[in-house]
Image 1 (spheres, helix red, strand yellow):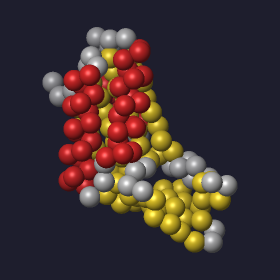
Image 2: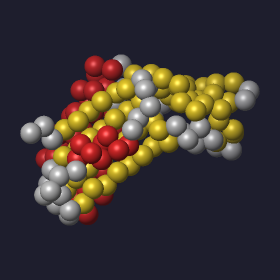
Image 3: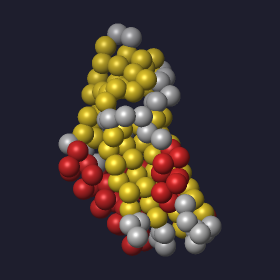
Image 4: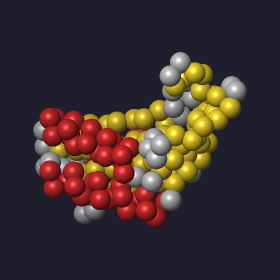
Length: 140
């Protein structure tokens, strides 16, 4: 049984796909993080975002994060999906689902995964404003 699901997609992310992957009879806690596109940054109105990735390396780095999480917490299953391409406001950029026997571990592991993903995975975003655009650091 595969316990890690890592995907980078150029189509809409479906949160339920991640939840379905991690759901299993031995897990009492499933924590899900959904990262969405917000309508402002530092008081400036955001129109849309564009995500780019070096996909082979991004998948490899996301898998390393999942493996590290599995070494630190009693994870039954973990799913991490990230979007590339253009996203409108409220679009889903990332979904992470973690299933563990108890809730505390799933919360902690999920937070570790999103925090580490933002620091280490080669995914870049460009923010589009009404009056211009800017590349942001290599994280969602």
